[in-house]
Amino acid sequence: MSAGAVRLSRVERRFGEVVAVRRLELEIPAGAFFSIIGPSGCGKTTTLRMIAGLERPDAGTIAVGGTDVTHVPAYRRPVNTVFQSYALFPHLDVAANVAFGLVEERRPRDEVRRRVAEAVELVGLGGRERARPHELSGGQQQRVALARALVKRPSVLLLDEPLGALDLQLRKRLQGELRTLQRQVGTTFVYVTHDQEEAFSMSDAVAVMHEGELQQVGAPEDVYRRPATRFVADFVGAANVFPARVQDERVAGSYALAGAGGAALEATGPAGLGAGREVVVIVRPEDVVVGNGGASATVAAAAFAGAARHVTLDAGALGLVQATVPARADPLAEGDLTTVSWPADVAWTIA
Amino acid sequence: MNVRRHLFSAVVSVAVLLCLWLPLAFIVIDSLNANELLATWGGATTRWYGEAVDDESVRSGLRATLTIAGASTALSLALAVSGVLWYRRAGLRGRRAFDALTYLRIMLPEVVFAVALFLLFARLDLQLGTAAVIVGHTVSSSAYATLILRARLSVLDPALEDAAADLGASPWRVFKRVTLPGLLPGMLAAGLLAFTFSFDDVVTSLFLIGTDDAPLPVVILSKIRFRIEPEISAIAILVLVFTVALFAAAFAVVVRLARVSGRSLALPEER
Image 1 (cartoon, chains in turn green, red):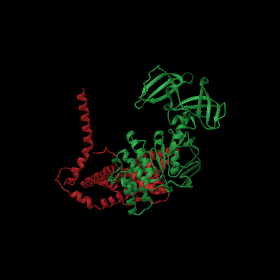
Image 2: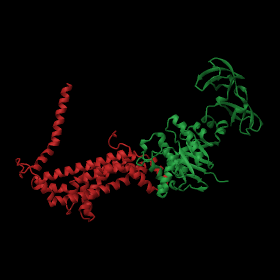
Image 3: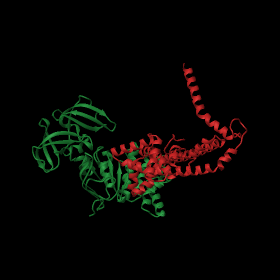
Image 4: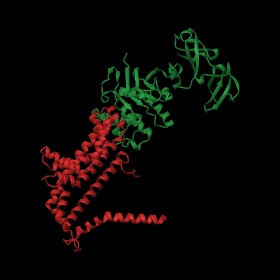
């Protein structure tokens, strides 16, 4: 059993009065595509920079590949970074940019030439070796940044919002390419983004951060279906949130609850929530079933959004319920009377 | 009304330009005048240029000038580069003090520093001479160089240095491979400014040169104190040509650098 590729223990980082990262415990498994997500200012980039060695933690330890690197400067760490701005050296051409790190390692000339050629080929930039960064498109610059880091064969590759500056179509394509590339090279990728959809589609696991604190770590589906906190529930996607009180835990992790106005609710949740506890129940809009029994509701608003329809229903005591239904379903108009329900196993309880 | 106003400003502009450039025309004419007394046109000659080039005091003056300008430029650049690198990491207070000291060196009259250095050298029992003049020129040259490099550094992306460190470059290697190339255009401009400042300085040089060979501007000044000769005009023209050539060369390098680094430095990029 190998130690994780990266391990952060009780890591803390302050900037003046502001705590950027608070008592962070995180273990990133070797070979994983691991994402750290959260809104801007949540501490994700600071965390990445601490792993890179570009930022020193005020407390705690950082280990890479089982070795404590807390006091090792950036240039001696076996990790490399793809920067948000790419940070390509403007006075060097593509080949020289990619060769930069190997030159610092004092690799023999032949090896540098061979590995640079391989890396440039790997990211699909063969033939552009003599181009200067400013002659390349944003997507191409991003690939150079990737090649420049990967050519060093780091044990961990850190990526700081590498697709942030690109347009949507290119983003989508490069997301797929990055995932494929990661499988191909087998390096641990630590990917920072504020885009949860991007993180979900690429990652084996994601960590959600908020105001310097780690909220949850897990497989994308776990985080989406079983968020640990209100913040995570909201951040990773739209959610209906119903305040409720626990009545009874029937089996471990399966609850009967009383919603607003005493409405009976059923939901799954973390085991061990005591009866009488005030909680919230969340239901994703796409899990809401409209017009198939359940509570009666009035359509308050309906909007067509291409692939789906977004419907807002007034369900009386429960309050407003957002539902996402297939676009081909019977169109509902404002004021229509219908019903709203959801399977018990999609409702999730958050303490 | 409009036409008149334009006419007026046109007349004024032409008059001002004439005042600025006519003296230059006169020294060109003087330098080619075969009449030694310059009272009347005595036919064209290049004799004065020959005399200027052969004049031992001019030669030693030029040697002194080039030595002083070269050394004070190098010193100014070294001070400015290390200064702005410190400045970047300095706190607010340090920055303020640094700025104040920089601007003061530009704003205070040159003669004040010249006198101050003169007295300082005397008190320390140090000999005046070439070295003293180099120090004197560096006082203000390094301040100009600092302002130029500070501006240059502020447009450099700090992520570039992070990237270099991340790729395995030690702090010294980061400086050498990333920071210095980034500063190069600024260093060129600053160096040029320092060089030309030193090249035509009289005040500081007069105060501090002592008994060493005087630099060219001081030589010229002492020559006109005796009498106005066509040779003086020839020397002036030679200095002019040299300066223009220097700037043209520097300009060519800047344009080249701009093309290489893909950024416009002083001018909008051509193409």
